[in-house]
Length: 153
Length: 357
Image (cartoon, rainbow over all chains, first blue to last red; front, side, top):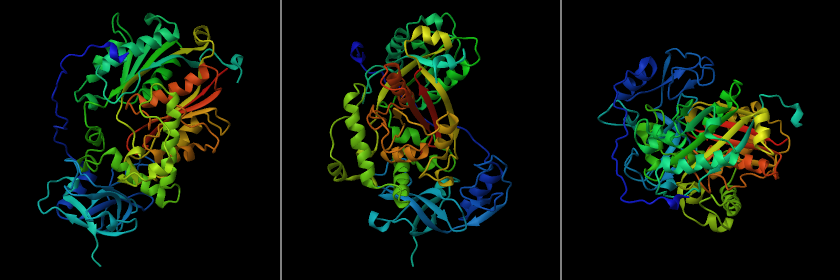
């Protein structure tokens, strides 16, 4: 049925996908991003004493408010799972091959999606120890945690 | 369950239509929808004026403009005024809303459709925008990279191997040979697939679905109206939708607790199923979903080929339900389960259990 349509010149519409809003981040994410700017990762203490990272305002299981007990975590961490990106897109945090990974920061009970800057795929494995690398000029974004890199022993 | 056990509020699929999934459709999204909706109405043997409620599922991010979904209403025909709704989700969720609306009991027929054109955009960049805007979207982490992480987690957990992934792909493409709407089909050797280079290690390109454009529509009817319209309606035994944490690191991505719960709440009791259609967008997800639902080895999973053979985002979930329903309506199956998903790494899952008389 598609072939029944006679198509002339394609119509071109240029649009920009964006969130053109200023937002306040609230007590939990606000604290997280303020600390991240200063090179400190924070998790949040849940009712069951677990430390959740990245920190949320509400318990993902129960919907309960988690309060505001922020817990310093990192700068060391462990790769829990990973994939290798040979051909980074313009939207990716690094411009050379890297791993996207779930990294569990030391002191946290959950893991965060992050970039791992390991240089080559052979250097990456589940369970590898990594250390947070922060941007020298923070922007107030999650990418202020520029990447995790292999911990030098 | 016998027909006379059913009350007047029982709801069934009585007609459907879908377009062929293609890599780059020349018609616009609404042009894809117009003949599909018309064909579903014809297949059900109703008039447009019989439809008491219409619900559409699509994604404005794909078109790249706010309220892009409004133009899709041309396919339903909005004059004289109709009662309608839209979900920014797969058509399976539009069907869910229409199914709930039918349960009010004051209307007999409802239309639901889903449509998506991924071809004009770069899906890897578009879908990164739909993630949480604070912790995930700025990373530009695309669905394929997330699926690669999930695949490695599955391997590390000892729940699957790369050979299992390739076997899912070979099965999908072989099944798709009998599906005229599929995009990728054929006979593939598992060892040959495993010899392909990695795309997002441990995933290879064939573990990733194609980019697809398509539309799908279903007509549902209540009780006696369904029996009047269709010789063998596909009765909706149950439909349920469950959600887990958005952040992949806050849940077990090697299992799908929300699928398990949705299947149970939809009424699946572990009994035999003639057909199962799963929205296993990436090959490892078929293994996760089969485990989550509790499907044994002999179950006929994705006889259509599933999303690895055609992945028209926003239609692909409703197509699973249509593929299951079609086999009940044509008499080749009596009990079928269909699954749709949304969000990163199976965050949200919908299960629909269908039965013949």
